[in-house]
Length: 306
Image 1 (cartoon, rainbow, N blue to C red):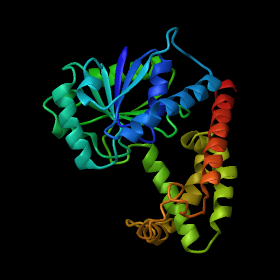
Image 2: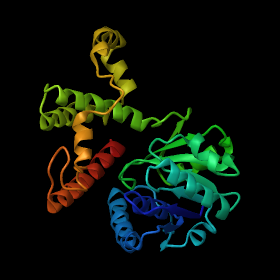
Image 3: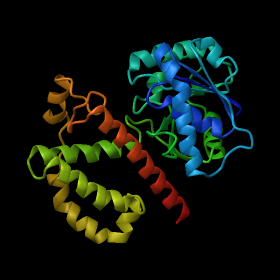
């Protein structure tokens, strides 16, 4: 693939564009917001610099990234179109209807949704066989894993074409065999976060110390030994014995913790509003973003080189 389009230049669009360009693809980024279009080139440049520090495979010719407010122009020649608009099923359905009308008939239409079923998105297009999930992790230019999700009508050829393209970019494809809400990464992550919130809600531990425990305990360990391999390391008999009583006591609520819903109701949404579970000044938020990016780069390089 030589030409791609990214629809939506929000949190992840610039990082995805920089990653595709490093792999040799020319990328057109579309957004309806003039402000988003203005900031995109600078964000792409920053992400490209991070990719250079990570190193690894790169195409002999780095692709060009351009920005446009014209959807038809963005997708005209694209072999791969990646939708990255807000996580709203109605908005995505509208966008895919437009992509279906204006993109090349042989273009792959991929959604970066975090968990909306691909089979649902396929209902918005005339040819659902070319619609597939392509879920990047944030920040997309640092975390190399990409989930590839086939909907009920996705062509196996489309899945394989996309998987091959991801491999050529030097990234790590994971095929999701069933189109379940949340796919793999978010299902595991949200199960962890639900238990963490329950422990804080029940005053078992303070929020800061819970994060310390997870970061330097299971987080540190799972970066090297993933969960199912860890079962073999610990011993299946040990897991069987502990899970036989602990599973009954783990949090299983179907709604959302009041710790979250109350803050959302007050507009306390986290770093983007200056207050969430923790408090942030603009300078502190920027400092944390830069610090975490450096650490993620270092961890990735350590895992790849070990």
